[in-house]
Length: 183
Image (cartoon, rainbow, N blue to C red; front, side, top):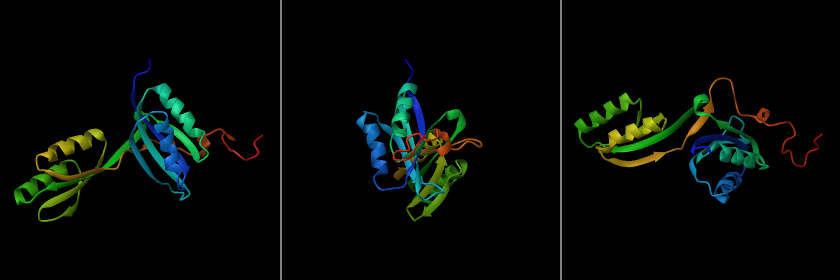
């Protein structure tokens, strides 16, 4: 039996109302929990890219990928392996920093983690960090002692390393072209 592990799926879909709901329903209908979900348009405004992270075994991942490919709104599905993918998440953290000494300490931590200071007030600093889970967790742990006022995470986004991309060429010609004449 294959062990359950984190799998990252990159999915190109039509950028239309209801598409995300159909994709998510596929997972929830089969009893799978999505660990992370990030969606945005691509360089083509008619196409969105969904990055989905799941805790499943290899067989389950293949099954879900094949089920996704059957949806008419899906252009392409690719499983991104950890060794061949760049994965990043944006984390915004608002920290209590109402004294100059505390503020300086938070700024030093931000510099060490290459985080950006995106808002300053008399009582707080808001920081932005881009990185993987371990970097985000370490950053959050260090800032906890200052008092985290608010925190938000985008969910993972991922791309394959090198020249490889996700596009229609990853699907076999004629596959799932419903309503079209296929020879």
